Length: 105
Image (cartoon, rainbow, N blue to C red; front, top):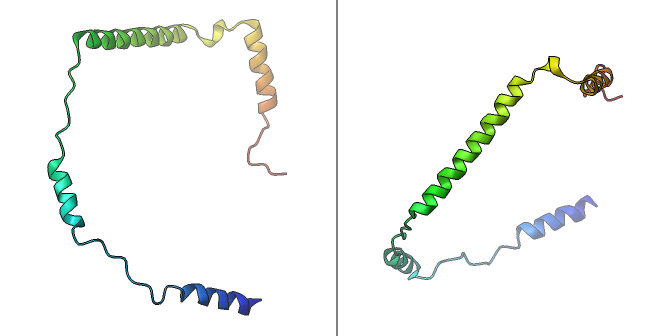
């Protein structure tokens, strides 16, 4: 078994003998340089005033909504939790108290 594997490895390693090294065609570099020289400069697109206004309005709406969410979440503290929320919190604490993610038994 080991001899077959060794012979197989040797056959694979020697399979490249007699092959020629890959070479590019002689004019490849020149054609690449011509392509680079002939490349057009990037085009510039003009953004209209309407697009600027829409973009700024969208940014303002997102900032207002994010600020509203942040301020309302800070205004709600844990003492104002309802009875259902308190029960759910106690329930999760009961089951998660002795949970160990590193215990593999």
